[in-house]
Each structure stands twice: as C-alpha cells, then as structure tokens.
Length: 383
Image 1 (spheres, rainbow, N blue to C red):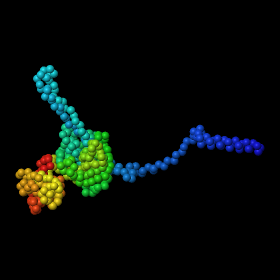
Image 2: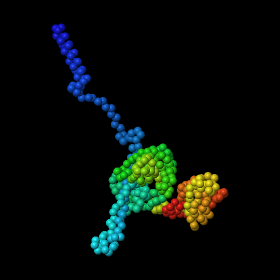
Image 3: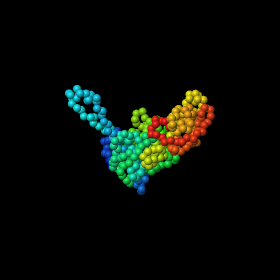
Image 4: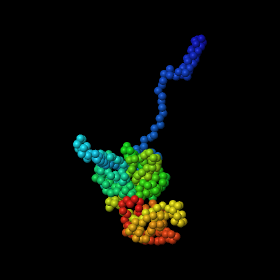
C-alpha cells in the first residue's frame, strides 16, 4: 500500500512539473478558457441630452439652424476672337457663333437674422453673382435676392421667400473679451456645415487692408474658404461676429481669422433693410499717417493725429477752412490717433449736422465747425 501511494505521489509530481513547463514555454498547447472582462459603464443620463463637461454642444445646437450655405453662379461670356470677323477666314471656315456663357461658381455662408427671410453675409460672397441659392440647415434650398450691400464694410443682406425661420440671437459686443471661447460655423470648402472652436485673440484689429472700415475680432478658431459670411458665436450660441477673412500664405487656416463685430454688422444691416443703403459722414479730405520723418519735417511734437494731405475743392472741409498740411487732432471731442481712426469717426457722423474739429496748424491749435456731408460710394480711401 505504501508502495502504491509512493508511485501515485511521484506520478502527480511529474505531471505537475510537465504542466508547469508547458505553461511556461508553450502556453498555446493548453486549452484556453474564455476571459472575463469587467467593464464599468456610465449610468444612462436621465435627461438624455445634457452636454458633457467642457462641451459646447448647447451653443452649437442653438446656432447651427441659423447658419446657411450660399451658392452663387456668375455667367462669364467668352470673348469673340477678332479673326472670326476676317472675310478670308469666314470664307474658308464659315461664321462662328458668339462665345457661349459658362458658369463660374462660388460658395460661402450666411446667417439668418430674421424669421421672415433676411440673411446677413459678406459682400464678397455674392459680388457679381447672377444667381444666388441658399441652402438651409434642413437641406431646403431657396433662390435669394440681394436687398442691399455695403462693399466698404464687406457686408450684404439677402432675402428668401420663407417664414418662421430660426433667426440667430444677437450677442452683446461689449461683453466680449480677449480669451473668451468662440465657435465659428460655416461651410468650409463646401464640405457641409462645420463647427470649429477657438478663443478671441484680439479686438479692434485694423490697418489690415481688407476693408475700408476695419474693426475686426481676431480669433484662432479655424476659418477656411467657404466660411465667409458665417457666424462667430459665443459659448451661449449668440452671434458676436461675421466671419470674413483669414491670414494665410497657403489659402488654409493658420490660426488667424477675422470677423466683423456684431455691433457694426447690426447697425449696417438695419440701415440696409430700412433704406437699401448705408449712409456715412464725409468731409472730403485725404489723410496721411504721421511718420517720424513727416513729424520732423513739419516740426510736430508727436505722431498723434492724421496729416491732411489733400482737400477736395468745394467739399465740407474746404468750406470750413481745413487746409493741406493741417493735422487733425480730434473729431467731435474724440481723439484722432491715425487716418483709420479719423475715417471711422467721420463716417459715424450724421450728414447735414455740424461737428467740432480740432486741428494743429503750424504751431497753433485751430477749432473749426464743419457741416458734415454724405459719403459717396467707394472713394478709394478719401474721407
């Protein structure tokens, strides 16, 4: 009996040793048991649609229905070659038909600003278009007409025959600050409605050479071709700007985009809807930035103000006694830092009203009352 027990013990030991060696060197030889994985699942949200922490889902949901896609077509007629009018050519080859028009297509974005079909967009999106189609968030498409435009601010108003549209909510520009999170919504490259996120990088950007009147919001939210005219919204989905331009060497986003502030866009929009045009003040001067060389030449104490380089004959400035060589220091009590600020201040004045202008002439200060005129359209930077 003891002998049998010894044999059993030795056999079991050898068997366990063999299993240990196989498990170590060749585990695939052993039969596999299905693994049991413990997975911790999040409990279903009782509300079902509540945004995750740090998400801007609610802002996007509020603004997306108000942003539209704009498709434009411009007919370009090919010019008839002069050789077609040569009698010898026509004798051998016969008459040739006039050049057939071919479509030139463009795309952009827009923002619904009223339930009865008014849409705010950039002027350059619809400039020269023969046909404008607007596609809504629900894929319905309408033919649009141009109510009015303002090339100097690069804004335009369209209208479609529809009602009960989801109009955007206008935000408060004075509450927007550098570092605030913003979302850019539009139709980049025609891929479809897209939302990108960034922050406000700067406010009051000007001297960019994009528009005559510049007061841009700068943002690093990705803005690409096709985003023009789309919405820049805050974290509540309220409109704070109209996406207008990008700084790029390649045509793609490099993290520097510019949007027209909602305060400027709303004022221009209301004027266009009310009268079909935008009215701005004008006095008829051409201004120049004061450089160190000019300051030394004219004996100026600093670089503040705008140097009057020219005065239009018979203009309000000419009638008031403003002369070339004067330095404009303030308009209606507001300081003039440079020609761009001068342009903005005068444009904001009401035509036919009188305003106080403060100038430096030689070594003295001159105070003049100027009767403001109405700014003509596109005068190539003249004020």
